[in-house]
Image (tube, rainbow, N blue to C red; front, side, top):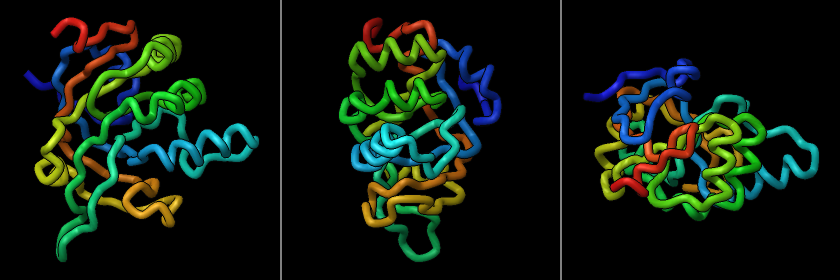
Length: 175
């Protein structure tokens, strides 16, 4: 059974458990390694981020350009460990969650626990299918990064699995 949630339901999201299947709707952001580096560099320099990181969910994806009449091109998850050196900083700044694929290091798991965050997995190799859940997409920062630019997405019933919950329970360890 899948749990239908909106990104504004922060407390419900925080209380999800590893293994829960979720249909997520609302606003999420895309960012990959280059955008994460710029965000953490901005924080280190005392600058503001181009998004409100408080309770934000970042999807580790670099979507392809849309075909005519489409909102976005293929938008599958990228390997999450590439963001591991940046994730603890953003979680400590208030980020709620991440969407990607693959294992996370212990520093990220500790930051998830410390901040009551969450890590979701999206299905790798299903970028075209995932893009059907994206109803609106706009670049909000770092346009020069192309596919890796920071985007604001509006999603509807994005199918995800909770991999690491706020208590550090890890589906990958159980599977």
